[in-house]
Amino acid sequence: MEEMVVEALLFGDRQAQLFGARQIGHFSGKQRHKIVEKGIVPPLILMLSTDDYEAIEAALFALLSIAFRSERLACAYFIQERVWNKIVIAKSGAIQVLLDVLQCENELLVELAVAFLLTLSSCASNKLAIASSGTIPLVLELLNSQAYNSMSLQANLDILSILHNLSTCHQLIPSIVSSGGVATLLGLISLASETKTAGEVIVEKAMVLLENIVSSSRIGLEEAAGTDGAIQCLVEAMEEGSRQCKEDAVAILLLICESCRERYRGMILREGATAALLQLSVDGTKRARDNAKRLLLLLRDRSHCSPKNKQPKNILLLEHVMRQIEQGVGERAGMSVAFLEEMISKLRT
Image (cartoon, rainbow, N blue to C red; front, side, top):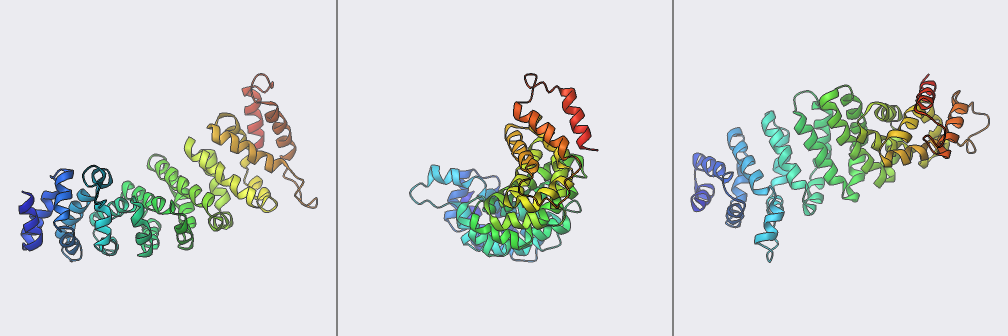
């Protein structure tokens, strides 16, 4: 069967190539590696380059089958050659062809192309090639124009995962930022927050990516801090998001405030962040608790603020609560749950 598939893809007509491409999905990982060595990747990529949607679909499924988990199998069977299927596919010109597929009008093909691009982007050797091909602005455009419209939830998550994979190569973060990535993520977080079920998953994924960008890049941090509505968006996520989302949101706000306390302290206070921070300082994850307390201390400290600036009306209450936190939250500190809830309620008024 392997020889038949190779023959069909290399020398067959349209029907033979369709048959060959569809058979690849039934092969074992070892079989797929063998046929890759016999040169079946280039004809599959040529199938992607046509206007034949049926051929494109068959080729995408075949290439996904070849690429999936190929690193592990390559290490098991081809240690000496060190040839990984994902690298072979990328070097055969698949990336640019995939970008063309991403711009077609067939939603299924777009989503398959996104899934395939995600698989390729998980390989470190492919990241620079993927970014230099123009992938970043194109996938961001898909998020901007199609999120919660026609693309599936999984396709949106796959795009966020592509961007996350690329962001782990720190030299690519400026490209993500300059292509509008920070504004797109903030917009997605704000939009997705309105959808409780699917939205929570999107918000978590987008927030993790945003934190990775701002914590790894000064330009990313400045872009996030300077984007209109960013602080409001992060405070809302900290108030109403999932446990993971709250942890990431407070981490980003802490980075923003630390970057320029004089500028951002008042902005964070005006958005009413103190109640959510207080809540997190008590019942968040360990990382969220630590970051919330650090941020509360930054918000409390007025030594770097101009005496001419009017302090927020809740600052004295915040001072009182912070003294309680410094003594340790719990029965030993004499701060009961009822007291805590009362303070949070007052801070939110």
